[in-house]
Length: 152
Image (cartoon, rainbow, N blue to C red; front, side, top):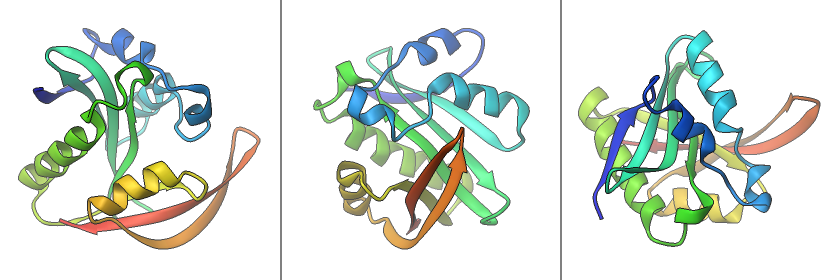
């Protein structure tokens, strides 16, 4: 299996929007169309398609977070039809290498819902550590998440 990243642009944004999660996971990750709109109108947001053998199978949005004064992997998802194939682990490993090669050895933040044990476990396996719990409101919903950090 060959994993690569490609910037999201006018040639592949529809593929990105068509990626989906199962119903139980959808409450944890903002829809890709929302991430793409954010990336179009907010500075320092970088959307990447995750490709396996020339097919988009997932999505990453990373950014420089002014509030944290650091880099963050703010969205990470693998299409529901492509899960349980090792793609998520391989993509996360490759993204950490990609990020380090591009920006050097820095801290990288991510966050996940406190009630998402699958994501927490995945991030911890890759060396992310829980730093704090924070809460916020978006779209009329209240969220409670762990902020996690990894030294690259």
